[in-house]
Amino acid sequence: MATLPNPLPKLATDPSGRSLGLQLPPGALLDDTLDGPWHEPLLWYAGQPAGPGTWTALGTPAARAGLLPVLIDVSEVDDWELAPGETSYPGDHDADEVLEEYWEEELSEGEEWPGLAAAPVLVADPDTRAADVADALSQGRPWLKEPHLALVSARRSADIPAAIGWSGPVNYEEDVARLCAVLRSWEDRFGARLVALGFDHLAVSVAAPPADLDEAEAVAAEHLAFCPYAVLPGTDDTLASYAGQLVGERLWHFWWD
Image (cartoon, rainbow, N blue to C red):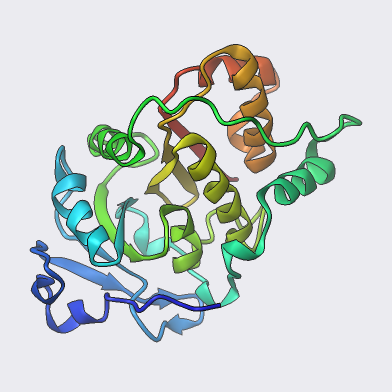
């Protein structure tokens, strides 16, 4: 597998990123992993909280330099247990096969895996939708208390968790690259972009959400296989009721126990 050159080491001696065509505010580089310091920085994050416009002002030019934006919760970042050395490559996995395996191992109860949902109609530019959702999330959520913009060297938004060895779903899936393969498929079919990471939370923007309940039920099955904790957290929840919440929804949020 060919790897991209990582621009982050340049920020150690050039904190503003001018050599990369950037004007970054004061920030910090993160290289801590479960096995000690990584051989190069895994991400940069701003020292100041994100606000409306931060994603576009910093993330858009950074993407041209090979660094993709994502909001992270800095209130939890010291507790992150990153393991990039134990992560495979997302492109080595097939999203349909990954979801079918989860379905059959955990959730089938005799029901056959329905397969991947068809792609709905794109209703927004995916990158514009990501910026709009990031602006909304910059106001904070119960699961995203202190959102700061981070930059990661990755081929595409879906690969960010694998690029840093994020271990949020470790109790469900030890190799986060398998989940990233699903995120890649969602990028292709739903115009999804990863916009936020917490200790065990993940959020994506959606530019092609299901337009009706039939489309939403097919998507809900994928979500259930991807992250059953978020889809059916209580005994009174049903997949149909969850599907109803997905119609036209521009933000998908998942968490793992």
